[in-house]
Length: 190
Image (cartoon, rainbow, N blue to C red; front, side):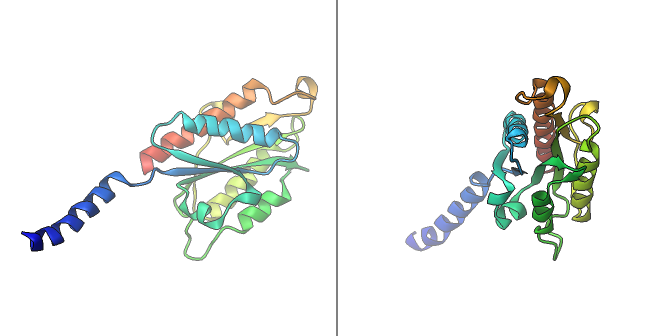
C-alpha cells in the first residue's frame, strides 16, 4: 500500500495543479505619458478590461515593462501621445525592442489608443503606424466597441472645449470600450 501511494500521490497532485492553478490570460496595457493625459486613457482601458471576468491585466508605463511581460501577455494594448503626427519616440523605441526572432508576438491580440492636442493633428495616422508595427510582428488587431473607435480609442486634449481640462468622459468611455472588447476577444481566443 505504501509503495502505490508513493507513486499515485504525485500524479494526483500534478493533475490538481494543472487543473486548478492555471494562470489567467493577461493583457499588457502600456503607454508613454508626459502630461498625464495618455495615462488617464490607459487607466480607462484598464477599467474596461477589469469588467471581463477571468482576465488579468498589467498597467505600466513602457519604461517599466519587462521583456517577459511582453512575451507572456495574451494581448498588448499600447498608448501614445501624438508627436508631430507620429507616435512618441519612446513608443517607437519600445516597439523596436520587442523580440522578433522566432516571432513570439505572432497571434497575440494588439490594440492601440492615442491622445492628441487638437483635431486633425494625426490621431488616426499614429494609430495606423502603431497598428502596422504590431502587424509586422504578426499580431491580430482589435478596434474599439463603437464605430467612432474603429481603429482604437483616441482623445482630444488641447483644443476648443477640450483645452485645459481633464480627459473628457466621451473619450474615456471609448478607452473603456476598447479594454472591454480586447478582454472579450482574449476570452474567445484563449
